[in-house]
Amino acid sequence: MKHVKLLILGENCLIDLKSFNKSIFTTFSLITSIYARQIATVTPKKHTVIVLENKENINYNEECDCVHIHFKTGMAKEAYKIADEYRKSEKKVILSGTHATALPEEAKKHADSILIGSAELLWPIAIKDLEKRRLKQKYDSKNYNKKNIIITTNLEIPSNQTLIGIIEATRGCPYKCDFCQESNVQSGSTFQVRPIEEIIKEIKKIPQKFLFFCDASLTIDTKYTKKLFKKMKPLHKKFICEGNADVLSKDKELLKLAYEAGCIEWTVGFESFAQETLDDINKKTNTIDEFTQVVKNIHKYKMAVLGNFIFGFDQDTSNIFQQTRDNIKKIGLDSARFAILTPYPGTPLFEKMEKESRIITYDWSKYNRKNVVFKPKKMTIKELQIGFQKISYDFNSIPNLMYRDIRSLRYGIYPFLTTIVRNIESYMSRHRKKI
Ligand code: SF4
Image (tube, rainbow, N blue to C red; front, side, top):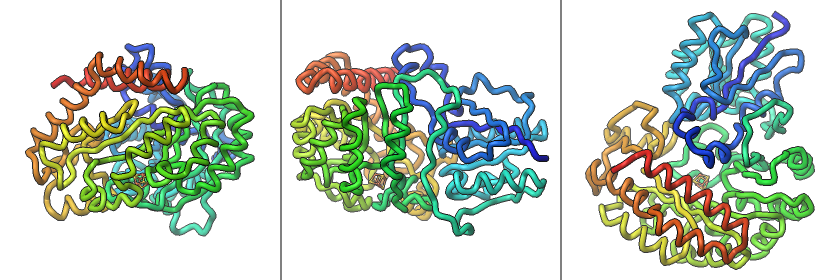
């Protein structure tokens, strides 16, 4: 078997797009899947690669030798279903991603082989073995003494038409917050950077004006990020990226360079307004006294701020929702995303919840930050679920959205536009789950 036809399913392929397709906004704001295109890049050229991004396009009878599915926990149920279906027609199935890395024994039941850790590193090795018909049951990047690198995205492969292009400059995060799956599963806490020239070359090839940095945080190595922002300035792109409160509250030079490079919005994981909670979950980058300054600094340089918040920590009582709303108003965020604490496999939080027998379901499709999957400490399951739905609903009421949209106009047209899109996304998702 020399020439192999490979089907790579990106993460977007596992999401049910039907509800999104009803809306012109969400259809066009969907971001192209990046990992499938990176895996395609490291596939030896002699093989044919098809990247699938839409579940509706799956044809189980399609001639191919191997199907690679890369997925996260919330999509595991769907990924296993698709894997089982492909295996019925005797196609080899390889699974990778954070969930398969955290629970390889479970994933193995639905696959011929599992890639544990870096899929980009292990995929070419597995393909070679597949060619020789000696595919192993698992490949673990710990056993290969190769340097992990961030792969250039294969932009030649046709993709869904999206408003926003995607780019990755760095990977991993050394902070290892207790709830964060990406930084806690193998190699996620190893921080890596791509050569800046390579990123600039890739950005030049991306047709979209708007970019999304999928990096965990662009404030981990500020020296590197400042260099990157300086080089991005002549490209005249507009972009959104994530950063941490410790740096954004102090480093005005970074914010100035971000603005000049085209940044229109920072996403910040504030997570909670309770310092005790932040200390308890090991969120080293956050001090609540700095939150107001973070927002002030970002606004000073005419960029918008999206804040992420999580509910259900052990110190949270049913008052947490109102307290969070009041504090968001006080610090003046442009948009906010709310989530229910989710103990993802591979995290210290998952281990703790299992030890305390607090996990109430292992139905992975519920692990999407919108469902309570564990017993909270100082609230009932119902209080947490309803409180989350109510804050998502009230915070995103039309008068509230309009107020925040109009207020963001003072930072310029692009922060205004990104705030509108964020708020519309939140408005639509609140209606998908009525109280
Ligand atoms: S700072 Fe963000 S990316 Fe890093 S470990 Fe914490 S939650 Fe994860």
